[in-house]
Structures are given as structure tokens and as C-alpha cells.
Length: 103
Image (cartoon, rainbow, N blue to C red; front, side, top):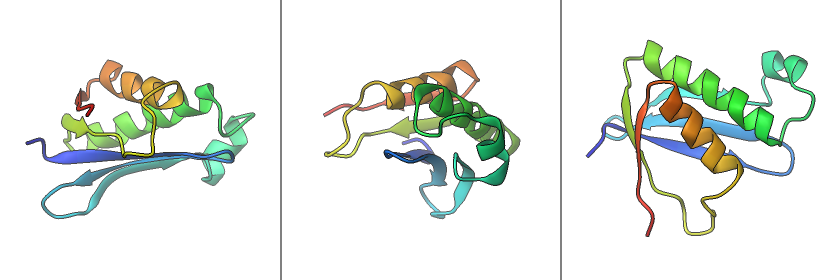
């Protein structure tokens, strides 16, 4: 079992992602398009380039917190496609070993 799990929320207005430690239930890394820094840089907040930016920020924060392994299981209502795949792939490309469990 991996020590952390990502939580990804993609809505019509924003993208939010965090890594939560399974044992302590503390958020290790957090990134979202609603922060002031990200709003200024991004043109649109709920699209794929926004997901890629959030994935990059989340991967950097995770590496700073010494988290290099995580597992992701999509919620029942979430579809594992498009924006979520882009974010998960960017985490993997930036050095976070992420295992995806699809039911």
C-alpha cells in the first residue's frame, strides 16, 4: 500500500488536486487554480493546460515533501479520462510513481 493518495477535483470553474498521507490523513501537497498565483498566470482555469500546470505544481510540492510514490483510485462518479489522465500523466512524468487502480 502506497503512503499517499491523490484527490483530484475538476469542475466547470476550477481544478484542485492534493496528496494526502494515508496514515496521518494530512495533506502533503496542495495545488489549485483558485490560488492568486495561478489565476494570474492561467488564461482559463478549468481546461487541460490548467490541469497540466496543477500537476506540475503538485509534483514539485510532493518531491519537496519527499513523497515519490502514490496510488490513485477514481471515485465511482469520476471518469478516468481527459483532464484527470493529463494530470496523472504529468505527475508520473515529473518523478512521482503513481499506480492507477481501475475497478
